[in-house]
Image 1 (cartoon, helix red, strand yellow):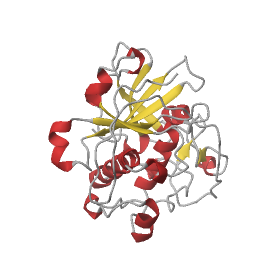
Image 2 (spheres, helix red, strand yellow):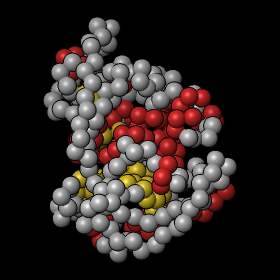
Image 3 (cartoon, helix red, strand yellow):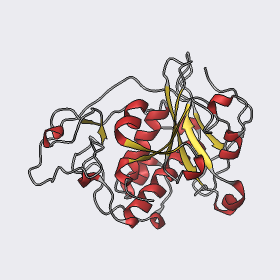
Image 4 (cartoon, helix red, strand yellow):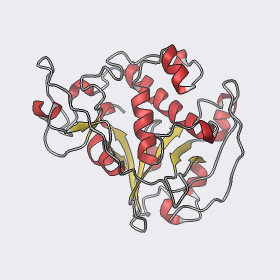
Length: 277
């Protein structure tokens, strides 16, 4: 069941001006899978100080890299909700696809060819991630853990990491729980839900925080989440952008990110940021 439309903004997007968009809806998880096997690199140290299955060589250790990732991740995700629907990359067809797309592109080298492909205006002020850049990561393009179990060097070639991961896999193996209080969310964190009333139970929203696109109104506009509704019937679904205040008061209680809502699983944070405040 989709969340009903209770408010809608009509938006026009240009590189110089982006207008607010708006209402919320339920995302759906994708079913298609694609994996790339990465040959082992004997120079890598397969340590995992948090025991979450994520190798330490993938974690962004420096505060500057962490900040740059958060800024790029949220800026890219919000851009998808503000751009014209016809310009949305076709791979973004549900909530998990939005996570994967924004995550991968946040780690990308943000050079001229990338800007041309992504259709994003220049954002050099956000800074570059120095530790590694997609697709030249220690695991190549296979950024997401897709299997349970302790980390081992064999994971580089046994299918434990892949390019594709659905919403449940992203929650279970690539993020970690922070809180059921949305006030603990930082830009780039994920709100996960489990809606047993739907065919695809696991859903996600990206906590953007203050808009990086609407700088003049950011202080008064409050925090936002963005997500993709996922397909329903013959519809491919669409991107949505919703204020957190509106989400907390949503007419359907099962979508409110509050502790009393058992459908709300909580705020989660990417494992590559683990150990940060």
